[in-house]
Amino acid sequence: MKPFWKCFVISVLTACVTILALLFIGMYRMLDAYHKKQNDYTRSTSPLTVEVQRDVCEKFDIPETDRRCQSEYSVYAAEFRPEIASYLHSLRKEERSFELVQEKLGDYLYLQGMNGSYAFYIYDLRGDGVYTIVVVFDPNGFIHKFMISHGGS
Image (tube, rainbow, N blue to C red; front, top):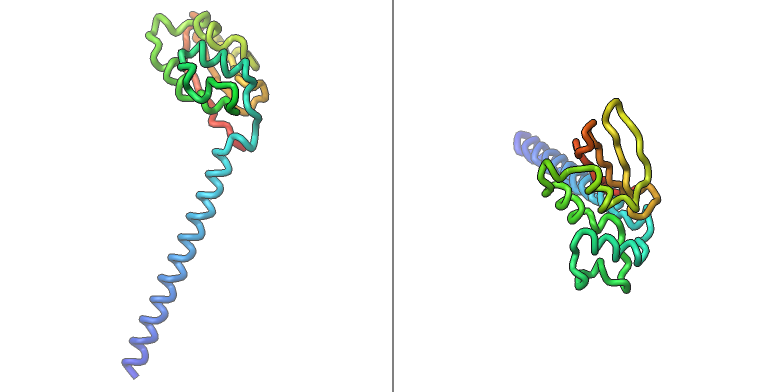
């Protein structure tokens, strides 16, 4: 009788481990698919116009040879995120002015408002509110912080 119970327990434990592994793999695949859908900004917005592509490439010193700067390619606002974020991060404190941000992004102003003595400006290269750049300025007109959305649905 003892060998039977031993085999039975081993079989049950093996089945439980197998079921847990299959559940884990299934959950992982579901989460992976969900994140791919969330990060697929092409589902939520449309490509930029050629004029906007060229303008952003020029203002952020992206070489003309870059695929994003060539008119035969469809380019989305999210694809310029690294350069815009890098540019804003690289500014020295005395350069982080409202005027400088307006030079680069002013043509794409989407919304603006106040929160106490801080002004916030929301820029959107496409103008559809999907992929935005939010810049908060302190009372002296310098960048307090900025955030760039990841787009998606």
